[in-house]
View 1 (cartoon, rainbow, N blue to C red):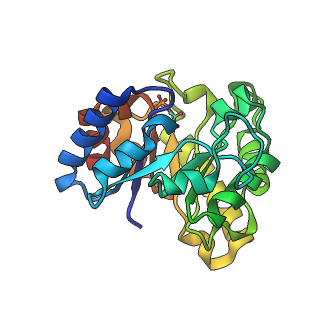
View 2: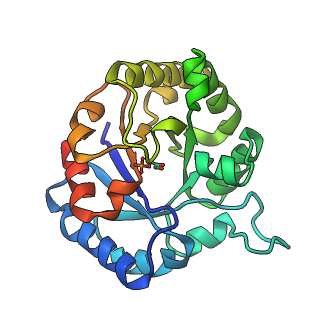
View 3: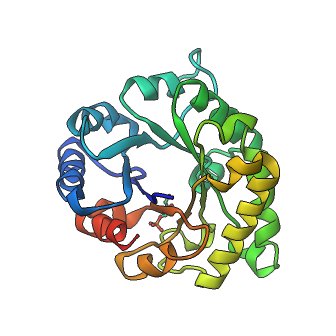
Length: 245
Ligand code: 13P
């Protein structure tokens, strides 16, 4: 399966530096075999989608509302995101689950809305450090996958991203064996739920992916790409991760 290397810029990027970063990623993408995706903040979606149009780097959003339109001040709908030029949308990131109290049920409704608008959802799951220490990582993650994915997820090419909460932005990662074990458990859940289609769905790893650890992580079974935070803000680092795949 062709790996997907996705950059989640989070709440970073003003117009000038965001456009420069996106252009630098596109300019260096020539020798990258992996599929590349950048997910800038909403404010830059349209400008970056336009700047990257027709090139090798796709654009995604970091969230969308579950309703297509309505009285939801400050929110952005899936059709709006699609209209701005995005093809993907990250949903249920642990920062949104924590900052905005997003539940599996809400993430599932957002994923349904995304699919309805023609977007490819990337649904994030991951255990807290306390849950891992209690030996519950696999249980927590497979339950989140079950609860957060709508039935049409496989047919829409939906992507799952495993991001242990304690590995995000900390420089710490699980061991390769621990990553492989969770990805195998997610794959098994996807097979049970979606049958043969579950085999072809991408499962990304995210959490302190850097140029130095990317090759080892991306070589693991059932790791079909990476969701990169901090290192995606430096074009050379993001491209180095993509080349490691
Ligand atoms: P870092 O790569 O900065 O750890 O962030 C990972 C992440 O949250 C991507 O969605």
